[in-house]
Amino acid sequence: MLSSWTPPAPEGATAGEELLVAFDRERDFRLLICPAWFDEANKLRRFTLEVMRRLDRAGVDCLLPDLPGCNESLAPLEGQTLEGWRAAMTAAARDLRATHVLAIRAGALIAPPALPGWHYAAQSGTKLLRGMIRARTIAAREAGLAETSEGLMAEGRAAGLTLGGWRIGPAMFSALESAEPTLAPGQSELAQSAVGGPGLWLRAEPGEDAGQADRLAARIVQSLAGAPA
Amino acid sequence: MTVSHNLDGAALDLELKGLIADVLGLDPEQAQAFGPETGLFGHLPELDSMAVAGLLTEMEDRLGIVIEDDDVDGEMLETYGALLAFAETKLGDR
Image 1 (spheres, helix red, strand yellow):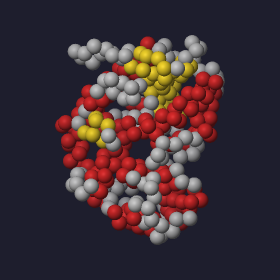
Image 2 (cartoon, one colour):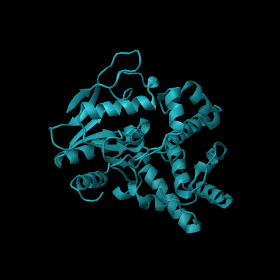
Image 3 (cartoon, rainbow over the protein chains, first blue to last red):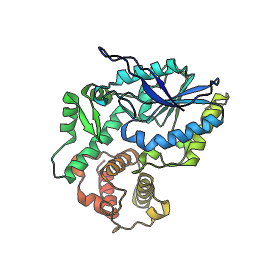
Image 4 (tube, rainbow over the protein chains, first blue to last red):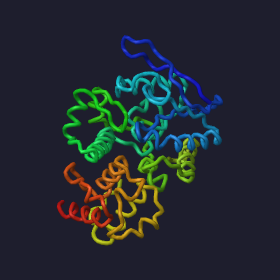
């Protein structure tokens, strides 16, 4: 179930292997999952795996790579860029011979445009940063420190910033400020309203919801079978 | 995201309780039983700074308001009544 793939090497470095969780039985449909990011990655990890289990039972191979700098990756998170993650997901799609993509939340920002598939509850870079910056200013205030959103944004652009325990480098930070998910040909939006119930990324603690996982997997299976998404 | 533009009184109350239930993973009935004096920040263990940030961002999305740094203080988050009053003021300002 654990396997590996090789993202493109950053300039001047050697390429390192990254791990992935895979339900890989060499079937016709091979779904690459671009996971949610940072704090949302933790909140949605179990849900993501639950959706993968259902798709596996329905005959779809599922491939969930670690983003370089996250999970088991040995690459430093601070050096990651939006372009680098895009290139990594494109390399993963090629290495793993993916036929479709399911991008979750901010994962939609790096979905390989050549693959047909779905953006589940896509999140923009702007909103992602806004939520994380706000959490930091609130925590700072509790600790009696004076930090403003404006000041933190400037610091993030210039030198990078640690948000919710995630060290985001200046290049990634600046790129996220204006990053919007775009649907490539063959990709469609799967809104939370299509899945029903409150999005699990909203929860203060990681949770799960079997009904939501059932419905999300069913939408994908239907769509793969040729029914309108 | 649904932006409800004409929220007032009971509709706002319902929306805000639903939103808190979604963020904190509470039973909708538990949230609907909130009164003006029900304690929030410092009373509900689920409501840490990350969850407060999520709650405020979700309020912006669903209520169509913008919440500034200076709006956020301990008082506004202390009780359900204070948060509801804050949302009413913000909606009135638009």
